[in-house]
Length: 173
Image (cartoon, rainbow, N blue to C red):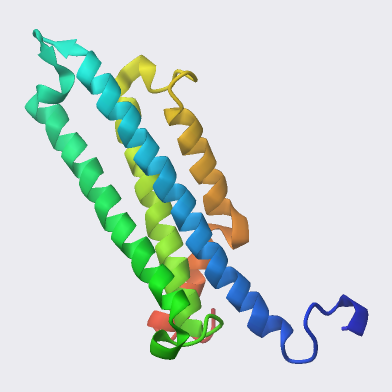
């Protein structure tokens, strides 16, 4: 490759590209987490206003169970995002940002948090019925945004391959 196309120099391009991927996965997961949290806020407000048999919708046991699942998904995703941020911040404890392990962990985080956000948005649309797809409530916007987040930096399949390469020692992928 000609020198003028290199970003960092001989034997450094791939190393720093992996570091960009690792930190990009943190940003992607954080954006998806924010979309999940806002979807929950929309759900909380709307399920407090909407009534079913004289009680707020959130007081229905089936709806409360779905809301609990969404809250749990947010809490688990938040803990995973903070843990990964700590890993990136402490290379002395966890390894360099460009290491195969850190990149694979970031890819796995991005996969799971984005999938969780899509699942949360789907549940929100189900609970809110026609309000869920109404552009005034942003639920469908969050779903679209997270689908885009899933696509950048190589999409789901590249994330899956990086995870398999590290965690399952798949050299041929």
